[in-house]
Length: 192
Image (cartoon, rainbow, N blue to C red; front, side):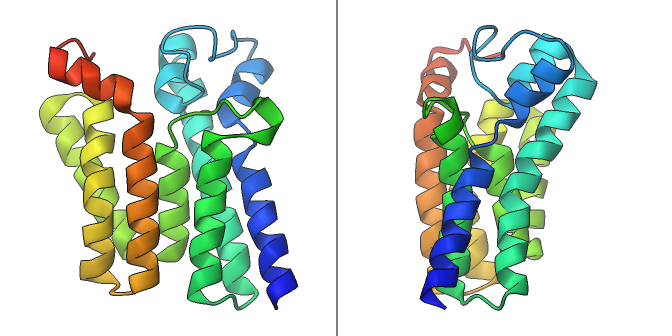
């Protein structure tokens, strides 16, 4: 089972390393998202570059690359630790993709997909938080930051697994770290 777990973790990282933003832009004849807008290969930047359709494809692709590895691991009967490591590996693949020089996105959709695979109730709470903040404040990065900060609490409240709480803290800390330029703009009042 250890070898199976290692293979699942490696496959999750490789899955996370596939950039839905770059592939979507390439297929749709759009510029590389790493060269325009925020230079971030994520759905929000693709929305700026190519519109709603391209952003939806990117969002769906990034979510699935977090969800599918976790569901595969669940189907194969993996324990909580392996599931948490698979989810974290998919997320890390998005942040530091082997296929794109380890320069990836901020990981919001991939983290959501991984959390959805672990516990749909936690994912629903995270999504509801994102939507409420987005509706009230109209700032995508702030929505992601608040949802990420609350994810470990939601794991504690709705799941109770210490393994998943620790995973939630790990993902949240990295996601917040990846948003440090957005945090600076929020503090300065220049975030769009």
